[in-house]
Amino acid sequence: MKDQEFRNKVKRIYLGVTLFFGLLVIGAGALIYKLAYPSFLSFDDVKQIETYREVEDLDKIENGIHLATGFKDDVGLQTVIVSCTPCHSAKLVTQNRANKEGWVSIIRWMQETQNLWDLGKNESVIVNYLAKNYAPEEKGRRVNLEDIEWYDLEK
Amino acid sequence: MKRRKFIRNTFLGTAASLMGADIVFSASIPKGYTPIALQNPDPYKLFNKDKGMTILNDKPWNIEAKAHLLDDNITPNKYMFIRNNGLIPQNIDIANWKLTIDGESVSSPKTYTLQELKSKFKNYTYQLTLECGGNGRSEFNPPAKGNQWTVGAVSCAEWTGVRLKDILEDVGVKDHAVYIGYHAADTHLSGDPKKEPISRGVPMHKALQEETLLAFKMNGEDIPLAHGYPLRLVAGGWPASASGKWINRISVRNKVHDGTKMKAPAYRVPCKPVAPGEKVKDADMCIIESMPVKSLITYPKSGAMINEEEILNIRGHAWAGELQVETMEYSIDFGATWNACKLENPVNRLAWQHFKASIEFPKKGYYEIWARATDNKGVSQPMILPGWNPKGYLNNACHRIAVKVK
Image (cartoon, rainbow over all chains, first blue to last red; front, side, top):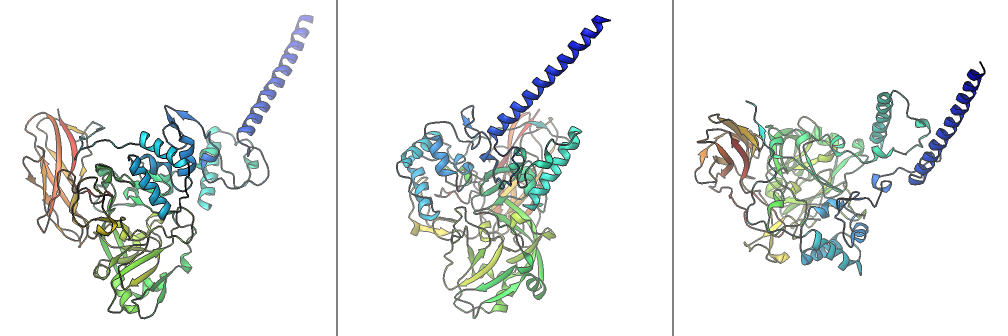
């Protein structure tokens, strides 16, 4: 009988301790989450967040690609992000190919017609980054069909 | 914002029912805060597009189809490419939407409400081919800047509206009219309210064509927002940029319209042919008018495998800008020999035409089926890239698909 009483006491203590640590872990988790995403559990009115990029991990790089924008990771990445993405999508940059001269002429066109500001010292950083990572390929007058997904045609 | 809230609410509801529990603290999620997973707008849902469409650009939105998605005779919205120069207008108030006709060459400006436009003038419906001037740009070498369209920036939907010529007649146009230029409700990417993202137009002879519409319906329904709701100019057969969306003003000009993207080098090609990569002065660039002859194989999808001795049925569409397609051919030997396809007449002028053919293959192996259209002036599609131009317009090189005979 005494044994049983003792066992029950231990059980109750064990339960209490588990509950305590469980709550601690949840609390700590919420705190960390709150640090990462300040709007979590804040009860005041938060302004509409227009793009997910503002809260996503801005610096995450995977396989040499900056995930939030799709830009290749290289010297000048941050300068390129800051200068190129306020007005248009990074996709407009990454789908294009040009040499230094070509990228400079695109920048001039944006400055003359699209309200792009004077890039100052950053211009050479940006142009070097773009000409290296988004250089033209020699395609000739017609390329082979590529990336064909073969499938059995149903009759 | 209402739509987003709706999506958010339905998502929270769905997520809760999936988990068999309410989202903890869902009641205390602050107003206006959207959970992270919901913040990236899904363009397929946003614009009701098929998942097979390719997103080229998300600011501004530029989305294209693939050849096999364009198989329908009349392109449904879900397969219609989106080409935007600026930001799509928000909060359109159709009760107060007005169209103003002004410019140097009108007797006096006149304004119509949407209801007046619809009821005052006779309505017409046409199937009209709209192709982006830069469709096929991705193939040019050296590369041209801009959205790298492959083959899918073309559509042929059924547009309903009133003839621009009827409106211009009602307003009264002076003899010295040269061009019309449109103005619209979209906004510039830079946020500068004084800048128009695009304001193009067409010469009077195109403006006065019977098929040039101010449309308020596409495929029998209100025009989808991304395609110009509530009012779109539709000038079939010309670069689709001439078919302005969200139109609220049309200026009748006594000179070539000088709005945004009318000036060189936008939507212009060298007046004289140039070598690939050659620099061309703005003064030597000429405005693109009619689009060139072109075709697409829309069935089967590239990559089809069939068994030996099976017959392959192909089909697709062909169009020729202002002109009509006269003959349609295919080749399975890289242009060494060509065979005729069966080609239908267009439903109306400026609608694309449908073709089909049944193909037998001589033996097993890898084949490419190349399609070539010829217009009624005897001009055909080239098999290699046509004349290089600085902005990569007018690529009407033959479309081809890969086929394997097992």
